[in-house]
Length: 131
Image (cartoon, rainbow, N blue to C red; front, top):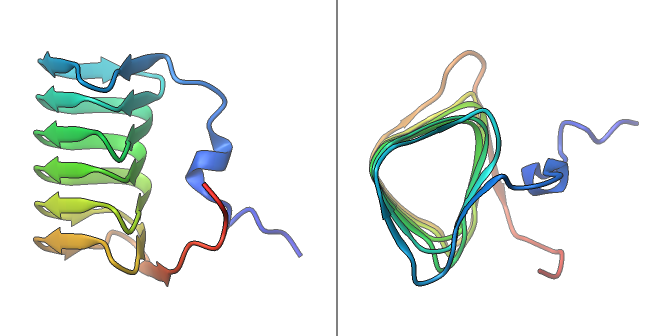
């Protein structure tokens, strides 16, 4: 039995080409074909063909668009994923979420609408792996 459909997005990331470090503040839009990790604050929109990870210490104020997203920190803006979104229990999202696949861990906070494209696949989970 293949587990590729239940594999976490973070397991698929080989490297990050763009990173905003903890304590840093970046203002502007980010466009890249690669992966982005936010450990600091980003104020602006994204158009990312790879994966965006907003870490526990990260805050993104603006609209996010990417292939996939993993949210551990805070997002204030609308989120659009072409593949899937994983929302961890430490996440706070103030804005609408649009994605064909959404996984929301128990304890996450979301204030907005959820729009499913294509065939909806909403997964609620409790993380069992050590981080």
